[in-house]
Amino acid sequence: MTVRDPGLTELKFRDPGRARALAGTLARVVGDIGRDRVSVMHVCGSHEQAIARFGLRAALPRTLDVIMGPGCPVCITDVPEVDEGVALARQGVRVATYGDMLKVPGTSMSLADAQAEGARVEVVYSVAQAVDAARRSDEPLVFFATGFETTAVATAAAVLQDPPPNFFVLSAHKYIPPVMEIVAEMPETRVEGFLAAGHAATITGWGVFEPLVARHRLPVVVAGFEPLDILAGLVKLAELIRDGRPSVENMFPRCVTKEGNLRAQERLWRVFRPIGGRWRGIAHVPNGNLRLRDEWAHLDARRQFDIDLHRLCDHAPPALVEACLCGDIMAGIKAPTDCGLFGRQCVPGAPVGACMVSSEGTCRIWYQYGGHPELGGYGAVCAR
Image (cartoon, rainbow, N blue to C red):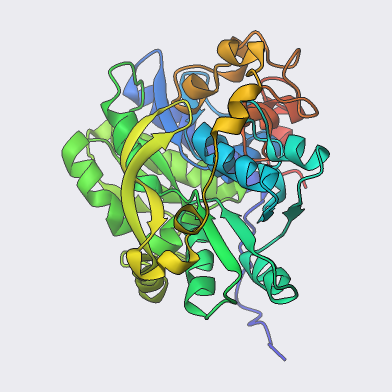
């Protein structure tokens, strides 16, 4: 049994008093910058969820614009990658994937559409569950693997644990640091600093961001996901912008180190290699996609199956897709409310764009919390 030292004070990461104090400090620092608009970007759907859920935007100074960037792995899974999964399923191959991938639109169909036609598309909650499903049958099973470094490490671990010969991986995994470079280089970007995701940095370490800071002279602050984590991270980021001091600061030291999880990194890069590829609606991202190395070709669905994408050409893409602004939203150029489809033709039950599909998508989060999620003022900050 653990006995708490009575002399220690428990730190509560949802403490309203501390939240109000941090919000006041943030307002002063942003005021010291002295501009009408200061724009920073976080690249994590979990950050956006927390900001919306706890009403943090109501506590932010009006001159601080906190933009969600391409931090939703479902949202940036590119159309051809979805098409590959759909084509395999329609060819009779069992496909297992995470639940939030089902409604992501491809060129003309989603995995849910293929499932409605009778294709065997199964929802799993982990790669281990997909491996177990393969073990229970002799027929091929393709795991449509999505997500950033955090879930890619889990996929790599499964590959290294001698999965059954009927288990295959269709990798759509992505690697976050390269896309931050793309955002920093966009001519229309308004981003003056980044709030980096604490869970991804637990794997990569905060040192991975030092080259970006050196090249683009933009500060990066690693932050956790509780209200106080986010507010403290924004205070530090605003201080760096105010002082003209581009550096990497770790505001999540209870989980993140400079080096990161070296064992997880070894597994990740033993199984995967980074290659260039498109992120949906954004751009070609050099080294932004993770694909299986040649050593694991026998598990690579792209090499072991003839994936016929031509059959999908018989179905015309929905007309509304052309009006979707998901790409601009994920790049931080537009907000969901700038899109004429948002909350009208595009809703969670019938999403037009990928940003409305996932619980980590900006449009889905804003829809769930009522348009622009400015809820409740200071009293709502840290409400449970």
